[in-house]
Length: 290
Image (cartoon, rainbow, N blue to C red):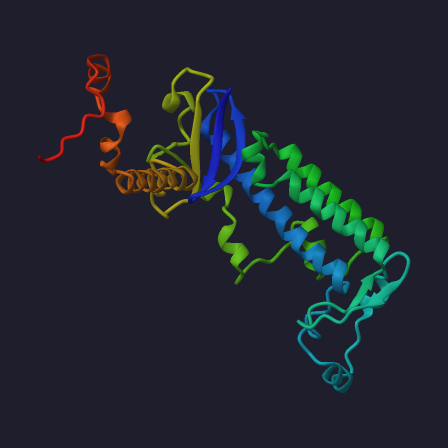
């Protein structure tokens, strides 16, 4: 199996395994689904942390308004009254004005937070360092865990406009957000390796050969963005270690220069004729003027 280290720009994303005979059309779609799936998990984790802290989403026409403005306009959060967390709620005002402030109790908060941490770990970029291969099944497992935690804490469900529910139903609207720039459509995705585009009409082996033990760094890119930057000759960590080595070497040479003192050559132990004079009995002869 060929090992693919998938990156977006210079940032590691995940590891993937694929036979050399894999069609690049299939491989590109598979990489893109995992990449976008990981982004979905991270978006859900961010929103669920806010859900644990401040409760469900306010209706769009009530977001950002003060309590006085809501009363003046006679607006009512009907879904907020229906979507009550298990075990009751604790009021924690959302300063941003996106959520209704009816947060779950401490026990239910821990359910959400623990599940979020577990889901993040499944799709974490640290899996690359650990040598763990990420599959679409793992991404789906993380999504299922998050969905289950929300159902435990909110058995009545979430409002239809809550971004968490919209993510689970694949109805999320990312237009105008930074997240929209990160998502890559399957039809627009490109894979690059060694400054070459891996064309969908070919097989993986057409580029990497027949060796199934090959490991390559593949970069995923949006079509039309051109070739991604080449990989640096050495990583930032290797560069740091090299600079540290040269600094230590310079310090050692500086100390050697400071210790380059020839006064020791006048010491008795440094006299190479001392043994000869000792046997001739001419040791310690001193001359004085008459």
